[in-house]
Length: 112
Image 1 (cartoon, rainbow, N blue to C red):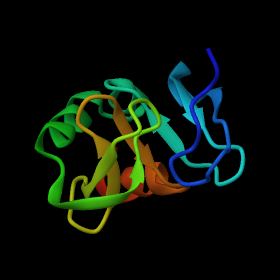
Image 2: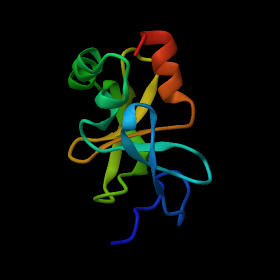
Image 3: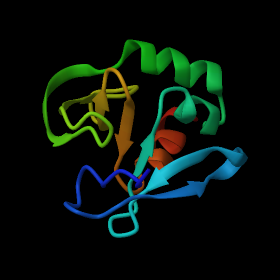
Image 4: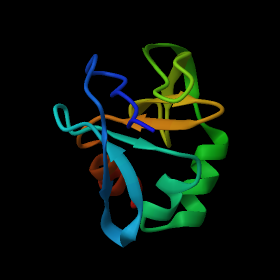
């Protein structure tokens, strides 16, 4: 099965990469954003329990997103994760997309 395309870079297949903690995620070789299947972002964070709690509460102030889910190709929801200013794209069924640097931002601002 071919790797899914990046939700932000049309016709760019993502590559499977191993992040800190041994978690595998899909990465776009062009924009360096990451796709996390359900449960992967919590495992990749410093505090998996706190991240899982944030994910259960997300999205904050949701709105229609401009990106489609790389798994089902349906439009994702854009909303805050942890606070209203860290906005991520999320498919309720298949996972979420973090643009380059957003995972590091989550770590700095929220300690995750």
